[in-house]
Length: 596
Image (cartoon, rainbow, N blue to C red; front, side, top):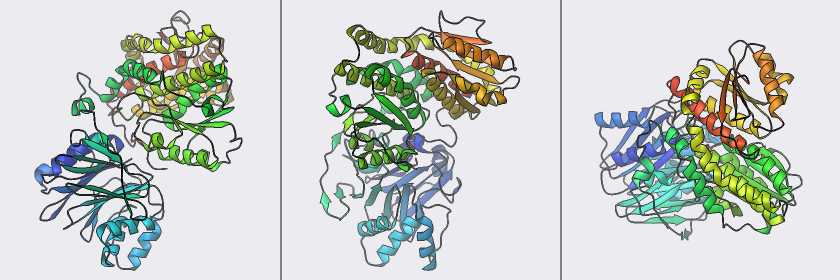
């Protein structure tokens, strides 16, 4: 959460910073600001999206060749101009991502020494701490290091000081990437902000510091000793990152990109080595958040039925608060689109402390999670700019099916016909997605009906409960309407109390033995006035099965729920469009959740 970019390039910096912020806006869009340094330090801030900052700069230009900028997802203090970054004190400007857990103690200490504060944020203590170090005779890098030593929590910040032609970047638990090219050097929360500006990038690791000047980037460890880092050549182009083509939104484009993302992911995993620590595991402990958590729920029966491995799925934020029992023989499996999710990284730390081997399902190969797990089992969805997960969810699920298939075939727990059948089903998934998309008009009509209500209930059994849960999450993320998912067998254990006339109840059901039970649940809620919507399979459902039926192409019991997720993505998307929501940037959300 929160996007940071800073650069030293010898040219006009303000527009470059704004362009970078636009690419980082998926990380937060409550407010935006920048500070650039020329003869003076110019500070510009605006509430709302980056476009509001761009408009302000037209009215109040800011000249300078060194600068930092920030797009905010509010944690401490409401979205406002006074709480927007950068924060400036005594010639020091800072942009910050993360949370300073001991900020109240630090603020009280600094206020007792005579410092005044202008915002409600935790971030504002950073320039005050740096200025204090400078008054004590420290250099800017030394003062930044000393400030970081006083702070607790996960954070990243970039500081600059008027009169010093350099940026200083420090990180602990929140990602920062460095970049250098022919026209200067840069630092950002995500290398997407640097595409087209740099030729090489490198990641900053925990408790490291970078000093960025126009021609050099120097790295130092926690003790202040210089360190070397391998730089990676960049390959993406600006068109690959920014182009939307004929699509109205990035999210709709990314739904259509799923077949290609599936093929790339499966191809990349086909010949990837899998060590004995994964194949020989007696138990798998999955930890993830949000959509990634529901992908884990979807995959649980695959490991259990195919590979004969017990699976527990945990919400990552809850895992470190419990003793990790039965760690011996357990494989820790962590799922994250960004690889920077704070709660998932905390779960990784807990697993490592318990001496568990770990494997990561990650879409960003250069992320902290990807670099930290013992085994990387990557997805290749490409960049996902829409905040709500679509193609990344699908590829996460397919990556776990490929993992379960690999473990099962290596162990010999599936026979040859089933092995070949599963391989064919995974490959066929890319062809099933366009068949679901061909039903978009029908799905959009039903979405308009659901959008007219204030709440919706999603139901499913087994893998279809995981699909229903992901559908409910997508619906509430994009529409801002209340939505809940329940295992259909739980309907009469409480949720049926909320059924009233007109309440939409969306059920997912495949053509297995649980179909009849799910249809009975729909009859129960229909008898109480609910509007029933069934997402099923062609040949297994008919027009009498519910008030509204979406018959999808038939798939196996393993992958059928994943096919139904595609329909639920379209349902949520079109309901949000009908309500006039900002589909790519839903309110209060950020793509990468880097705070706990």
